[in-house]
Length: 222
Image 1 (cartoon, rainbow, N blue to C red):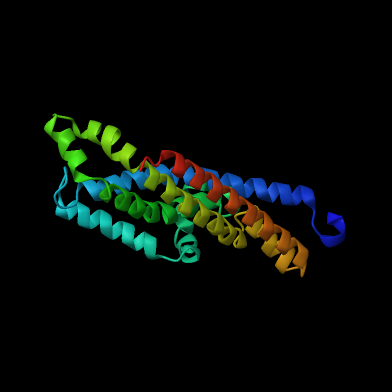
Image 2 (cartoon, rainbow, N blue to C red; image 1 turned 45 degrees about the vertical axis):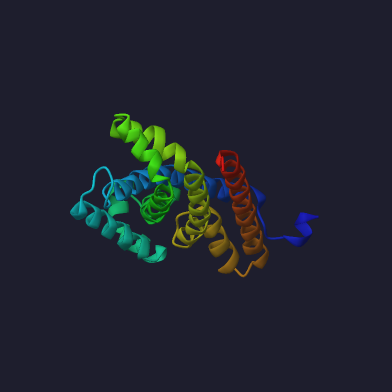
């Protein structure tokens, strides 16, 4: 049945491309989650009225985040070619896409982390301070747990963006479903290949959204 509607689709190659996309997405999501939380915490803690208030450092971090958040992803890939070649050794393959994916997504997620932290009731933070809690305790026992629903919701949105980023990276040889849709679908006039690759990407996005919404609902105690 499927062969009738998708005569040009090589299912083993489609599966291989899907695993490449899942690999790029999962690694970049994990790295983005870690780096984004670190950057978000620094943005929050060094802002006015907070524990590590420091305007110069906050301004520098904020500027870096804003710059990398504003660069279109396709241009970021090109700008990072020397850096990518230095650490990966190649611009071809799924590993070559990881630096651009992480650097492109982490600043975006960092702003979401900062917003989530700002929504925490300041009274909770002040109560922890008054009890003599260390900064590390406040971060691990107050800030992160209280903002966790927002953090999960934010990483869900970011993960979906990363799926689309992997498709763009695939166009310039990074592998995955984007590469398959472009090289074996669009360039060869095989519409069915492009369509099936798009359908698989949509399924991945829907699954990410469903799982993210489910976890956020479970964590939200309001």
